[in-house]
Image (cartoon, rainbow, N blue to C red; front, side, top):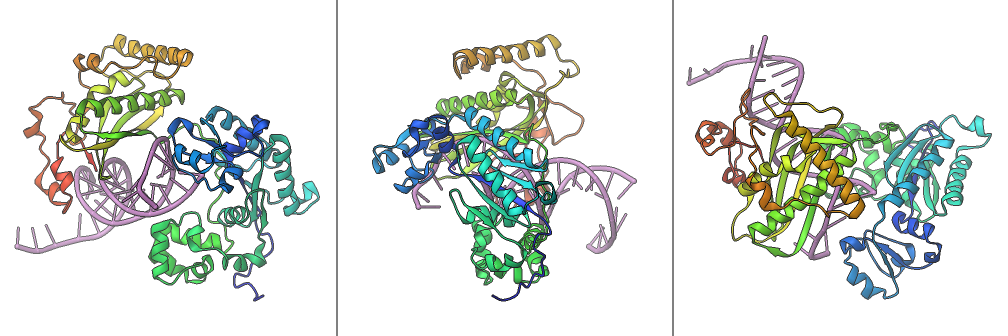
Amino acid sequence: MKPSPFMLQSWPNAIVHIDGDAFFASCEQSVHSELKGRPVITGAERNIVASMSYEAKARGIKRATPIWEAKKICPEVVILPSDYETYSLISKRMFSILRRFTPTVEESSIDEGFADIKGLRRLYRKGYEDIARDIQRTIERELDLTVSVGLSLTKTLAKLAAKFEKPRGFTSIKGRYVHEFLTKVPVGDVCGIGPNTTALLNKRGVFTALDYAMRPVSWAKQLLGKIGVELWHELRGEMAYGLNTEKKESYQAISKTKTFTPPSKSYDYVKAQLFRNTESAFIKLRRYKQRAQRFIIYLRTQEFASRGMQADLNRPTIAPQEAFRLIEELLRAVYVPEVLYRATGIVLTRLEDDNEVQFDLFEDPVRVVAMRRLSHGIDEINKAYGKHTVFAGSGLFLKRQQRGTILDRNTSGTVPELSPDLGGRHAVPERKQKLLPGETARQHLNVPLWQIKI
DNA sequence: TCTGGGGTCCTAGGACCC
DNA sequence: TCTGGGGTCCTAGGACCC
């Protein structure tokens, strides 16, 4: 073996990556032991395979295949709806086991995490590899499911290591062997390098992770910018990413998308779909005790073109009833008759913690409070009787007048009512339109009241 | 691979201000 | 008609991940 070009010590850092094996399906097999050894898939509620056990994978079932197809491939497969409550609980237990070993733990997703175990050798009187194996064994014993473990000098390397052998794998890469390992890694396997970047790198003659790490850093920066430099260091065993140990308590955005079959041209149908998505998004919003101010809606056509618009309320809300009118206006602007649509989506953003109620000037406090109580009441009922037991009747709220709920971000200081005469007064300056050559959809949709997102 | 759903982060460039 | 520099904030869009 050639000596390492990276001049690394064995363990300048020790990062462990834990990756649950077929996590959702494994959780089901853990909870229902009679499912052990049998092909299991989850995702029944969406009619698409979300996760499959290794037994199901061995029979040729892949992620995102339709359930009916999975059944055809493997008639004896056990099909289950996703039970996120249970998966989350097991995930929490997994991370609490990790925290028994070290407080420096990052929960990257429900089934994946990092632990920084540098400096623990003295405490446990054993090497890093043995500590990492202890973690793996403890999880397996206590949770009755398996994880794959990677140990290396950086997050990027640890993650590649964990992926190297699955399921129940254990891969350790110490400093001296980093370059050797990287010869076996296609550059597209590196976390952060997706299909587009892979294609670009291939055109530049970079195929393995080692090819990449051996280029000058200036080359990486020029081609891929900040991320390019960070990954370059990470692959060479130099930490560019620390562990984010904060627990996730809030979101940047909450979205709901739903594809419907068959596709539809009907305005009313599309609207009903969008409103249902909106309600679901708000339910999640309230579950996380947040409120939203900005709403982005989009429609996807049969040809997979997406077009959408966004607008803000003049204060954040937890009640869909306060957003429906605005959302319908957005929908009207985006919807084109005689076009076949296959999906609607909504994104709630500009989120903040829903602590105390803030009243807008001139707003009726009684009404705001009533709206909040209504929403929480609906949550209670739906909790008891099932999701969407109580839902918005589209005809009802359309008649309701809402005053001053739309903030025009194109002007400062004024909060105009939504009315037809805004057209001329708030026309977008011509210069602004000139800035967007070739973006016909945007120009077509240029309604002054909102910013537009394609 | 003709395509489900829910997220995050980065960047270029415009607006606006001094 | 031509013409400064710099800072901050925001947006739209792209890319990526599970």
